[in-house]
Image (cartoon, rainbow over all chains, first blue to last red):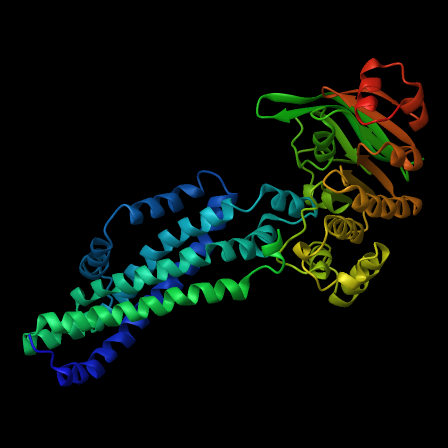
Length: 222
Length: 245
């Protein structure tokens, strides 16, 4: 097989248009997931049944079903109930809801790792549960959660390729278009894989930098 | 003298294990009470029960006339009236020393920023920690952290300080700096209940020593009477174990 460099150079600008959509889908759904998990996590931690039942059900259902099925329910299923989303937003919402469940688990385990003494200390000062979560527990838990959250973002970047199935013109879909017109599947998908890899690699390397940035001063001495 | 704390027949524990068995105690305004006793005797549990950090099973607790054990009481208001100092300091590690002291004043006491800052700086000065106000807890020694914890408790302007083995986690030289801080605070007239094994400190500062064993108060009285004249073999054994003859 002869490597045709000019072919690669020609397809890259076209693929980069897809990169923009891929990042848009994965970052937006990550933020949605983060907001969802930040809201539901204190309820799971501080409240008891029956308040936790719908939240635990959401987390378990989402984690126990394939994201592609969830995407199809939102894009193909909801219109039968009169709820319509364009492909881009269906993709963002499906991935956002999916990521919310996984991020909720990440936050929950980070919060569980905060020593009981921190709660006692905050309670002894007369803080209410919301204040304890907002000022004492969450800022510490989020530092612990950063590596796992970045990992979740990397997963989202890769999983976002599923939105190509419902017609979103992301990196994967752009690759499919090129294959359809050139029949050079091997080279095209190799380049697509390389672009995904570079995006994920950059995000993973950010994890260490963010950890260093948010590190609690003196922590390394303890 | 006014009663600050009244505990009547307090029984409590963890899960199904009883730790305190019908304990009663009164603390008057300005009084310093030292609680001593072997590990597992229920001293810390007793202290935590006063502000319901451990829930009482039965009995009644009053703080400044308010019933702490009443189901209608706003326990957060009760806790705001007390200053609790823990054995392991329990500062918030992600906040500077100043923020540790400032935060409860702002969000619990709802003080305006200027008055809260003034108060925080005043108490930090009182415990000789003003120069470390911008440091983080983990950048400080144990003794320094404990002094910040004392400052944080004092800043809330409590009617009583509850100190749970404030020097147990410290090396001897660091212990003295905390004990000296506590001596200084004790002179200011605030009521205190201190769980400690520091006999010299108890003799210097306490108005009364309460000796606990197996969840009960087995003896209480003037410090020198308990330390030097006790007839209890158990207390004698305990004092011997902490090198008091």
